[in-house]
Length: 84
Image 1 (cartoon, rainbow, N blue to C red):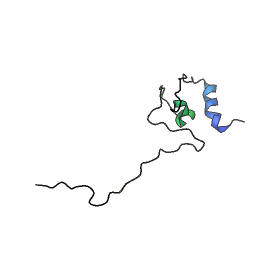
Image 2: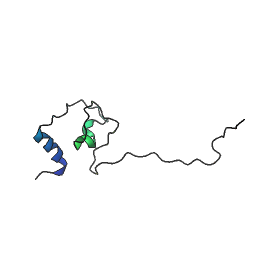
Image 3: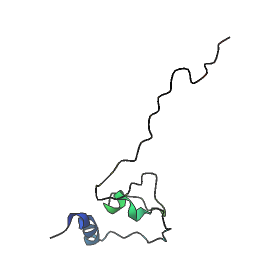
Image 4: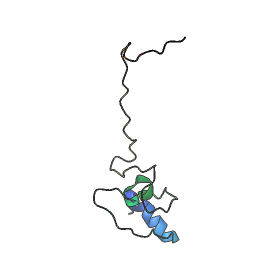
């Protein structure tokens, strides 16, 4: 029985898809091998460092990036420019 999480890698090996070259990894910095898209064989890029679409590969699957909090300004906080 093939485990689902390893199915993509096994299929790639079966059809002869070349593996990416290994690069030295700096401690604490993510690498392409840590990316969800790379692990699921969905990435077509061959870069030395993670791209701008990097998403960590977690047990929960694809998790969207955290969005910044929306701050509502109180009326009168920003000075209004006067027109002449």
